[in-house]
Image (cartoon, rainbow, N blue to C red):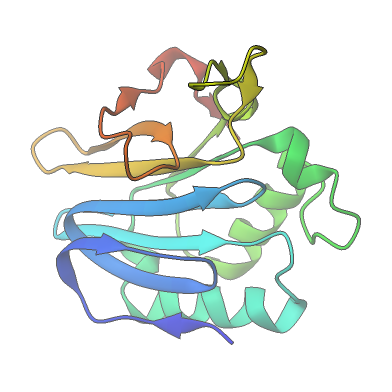
Length: 179
């Protein structure tokens, strides 16, 4: 079920996809999913992890990340709406501790830094829509990762999942927590 795509400067990864991007990676339609990106000098190792992923899907996802050089990543980021993801009973991750266990198991020799950002507030943003008199909550957000070659970092932004919305908002970097 996991699809690994060829390396490209700019990626757009839907659920169950893994790829490498040298410049940007967009994770469309994050409603309950996690956007995961690992920083290497050459680019980002990226995956769009669904709460519906099975144990085999998780194994295959991390095998693909390792095959792309995941052991060499110096920083890993996990961004997504914790509240929505952790509420899915069949999800494999129900806490940041679960994430930590998976990364330690899958990247045994890696001493990378690990950061998480809970995007629940951004996912739950309310917006007024034309013709509707009450604010509506975003059904999902798109997350964009940008490789910062010279800084050893990845910057993350989000926007409402809609073709008509083109303006990206940077996530507050102070919201990242190390795990």
